[in-house]
Amino acid sequence: MPKSDRQLTGERDWRTTFVVSACLFFSSFRPAIAADPPQLAVYVMNVDGNELRKLAQAPDRRWHAAPSWSNDGKLVLFHAHSKDVATVDSHIFVVRDDGTDVKDLGAGANASWSPDNKQIVFNIPDGHADKGQAGIWVMNADGKGRQWLFAGTSPRYAPDGSRILFVSSHEGNQSIYVYDVIEGMSKKILQEPYQQQPGSARWSQDGKRVGFVDERTGKFELILIDAVAADKKPVIRFRGLIGGPIAWAPYHKIALWVKSKDPAEPQRLHLLDPDTEDSPVILSQQDTGTLNFDPAWSTDGQRLLFVSDRVLTPATPAEAARPD
Image (cartoon, rainbow, N blue to C red; front, side, top):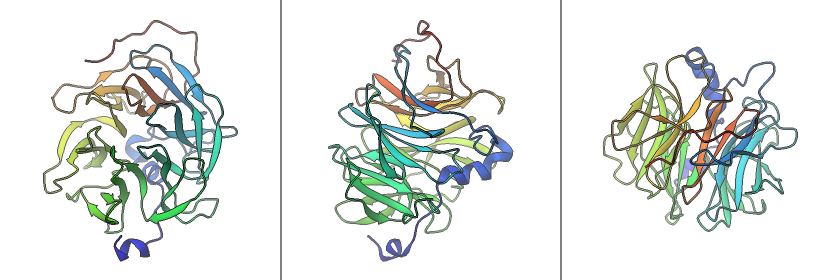
């Protein structure tokens, strides 16, 4: 990797930064600095809304985030904080897809599986309570063999495992980069200078595009960029009261959370076609909870993970069918 990357020590977790910087406009995005933070958990449902259930809630942890399926669909990663997102003590957990055998893999956040499920890439936020070096790390699937890679946050393996997508501010403003695993070099793929808080970027299922939510001139935008031809102009797909991380489905739709007009209303997961001008369509089972965010698709596109503060009530019939 470039020498300049090796000299960096890391960056603050984007979630903490975003809460502070965006609170005047969007205080309900992460109500993490409240005196009594919400109790969150990881939920799973079929894409049509059936079989909704709580998958995991880490012991003695309130704020949960960033669930991620293993590529065989048998395991789920997520991270959790003891109090809220501003409490820099997140640990990574793994749980079976039936909700059993929750294991603590140690300090870290924003974990992502390698395509063969043998390794996990993740980041340790700056100032973490466990005193680990801030930046992007890799470890074995059992939490052992930790190795620091480079400065940055929110890493994601490409679908073929050849690249790692991440966010970094080593050139000034936060921007989005791709690290080539074979060559050991990083390349900036977001060129326009409007990136205030690009947060977590996500690969499309074919690895050709990257999507993220950013804020520019007081407006939140869903932005799509070419992951290979970095000179191509980013596409602004949607503007509104929206938030990421987004999640690309295998059938090319994007899940993200949306609020219709009022920033104080609950955030609900919607589905959006990246290649049309259609408005986002609300997913099923979004009528409860004030926070519904961080969606993640199973590899077959049949199940959806997400984080919520809801309290489950007896199951009701699904309100929507599987999107086309």
